[in-house]
Length: 235
Image 1 (cartoon, one colour):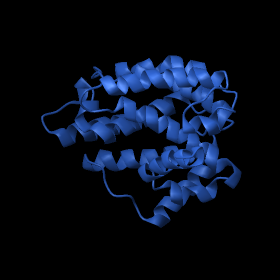
Image 2 (image 1 turned 60 degrees about the vertical axis):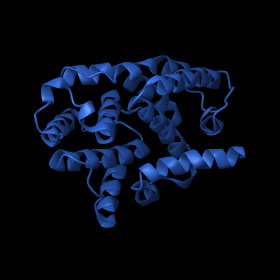
Image 3 (image 1 turned 135 degrees about the vertical axis):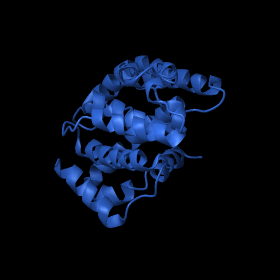
């Protein structure tokens, strides 16, 4: 497989996870779409490592590999297809590599809300610092953490719910934790347009989860367009 085809396969995998982006990308400058998608696809790889089910050893090995890979990007030595697009950005890749072990520890059930956010705080800060170079503006680190927690809840359900929010009914546990994450999620315009748009869709998914206790279908295209437009404007 060529480097271009390999990169396309990772981007296609991310777009399949985020079909909302096919609606939203009209609000993103064409020359910025590929770098934004590559960056978000990289973060999706890390989400998948965090949210693994079953034996964590293969995911932990993958996490260690990513740490080595990111340190290589700092020295302009990439092996992964996403690195072909992202490595030229002179970002603090090594600092992000240093934060990756946090993801393995964050699989443990937190006691409550503060513990859940604190477990991912250093990772959120590292992502924010790199994104300042990749997309030109740093998002609020707590926004990054809230989005990671939202994705984790959607992916693994009650396994992501802190002990303080667990109830006898699994759906009620999910609804309660989703509602609490929404309350903690900063209403920030701090990030780049691409981050604001994706975060708006991630927040929409979490809002639906807070009502149903299970992943719900996407809203209509007009609703998605309006959501993306507002986020792009910074409303």
